[in-house]
Image (tube, rainbow, N blue to C red; front, side, top):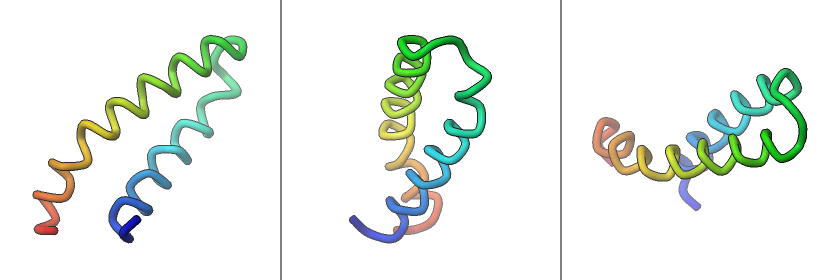
Length: 53
């Protein structure tokens, strides 16, 4: 994995972990994690284009 992907997913996962204790029980947190992961994967190509990578 390249540095942009590593930093990008680190930021996304860090933000998710910051709010996860405040959100429902385990199944709700897993569902939110899946949704955020899909959204993050979909947005990464646009982030790369914006950074010129």
